[in-house]
Image (cartoon, rainbow over all chains, first blue to last red):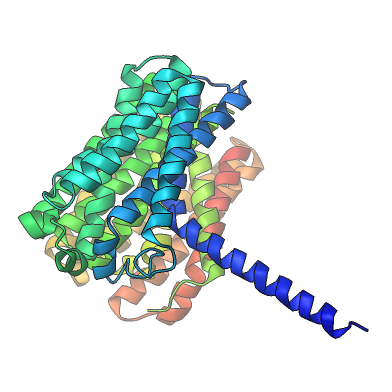
Length: 303
Length: 201
């Protein structure tokens, strides 16, 4: 039979593990795992787009590690800087920093630590790769979040450029230089960003308005925003399609990529002609799925 | 409208994966027209599965979806004709294009009975071809017997089309909730029959 001391010890351990689990969960939320995972997938696809079939798995693992740290770091730093905005928006008010679960100081230290580790690892791996990773972090945190996000809706272009850096970095690590395919893949991500972000701006229009963040819907109206989303979808699909062709993707994969692109045009078109919240949010989800599938197709080619 | 169940989601995902497989690997080495036709057919099936998965069954109420869904039987029947009766390819293409335009125009400009009628005519003709040609081809020995499965898929697509069409006219054969409940399973069975039928041909 367990003594009272043993029972007390077991209960303490249980409380301790529960506390650790809760804390880890809060930190996990800080790095926006789905978004980080998607960007990580673009980086790995960029690498295997040239180095396929992949034979150097240690380099691929190092690329994944470096990108994961850098992307997570920039996301945490953004969360620290935007904590006042997050506190005013219903969608984000429960995030770990505005809700007080993690202090801004802790977030800052964590964000800086992850960022330095990610960029440092990248520089050791290959200087140009490290520079591209650093450029992505700089554009995202300094240019997009700190400088432009609260001033102009056009800030998303810089957000888009930073979003294109992981795929460019992956390509650079494989090729050793910045080439046309890498730039096309990055352009694809840049053009995909409006579909991803603006559909969100439309859905959470009131939230952004309340927080004082200028968005395309608030500055130019919903019609113009939907038109830009549709045009950006076409440009993104065109860039990815041409890059995939230059990479030498099999015809079967190219056909599937075309089909998925047409699906995105269709939804963007319906959203333009018969706008509804359901279709708008459907387009947001489809765009994420489209990006993931495009990268998966490039990754599958390497197998 | 009832939310999709986990089983519905799994069935739709499998439908999408099967259609994607067919687009990637199931039609290589065929003539260009056949590849284009099958890519359109399975591509629309894939997108339809994804959209139902993402947006829900409400998407079926959209007139745009009804128009685009017509492409499935039209292009599938065109692919079968082009592959096995190439001498009829151009003639049938000259029926397919106006048929699609007929559905497009009536759906957008003449909703109601004319739109439903056009849908029934176009689905009916193309559905009969998808159902009948594989049976004829396999029973006469021009294709392996497994190609019969494509005919089974044609029967299922016809069944699904009929259920949805009668629902739209306000004289449903089955209740709306029953139709929507069986639709994911029907879509998967139909896609599986097509994919395995073509692979056995």
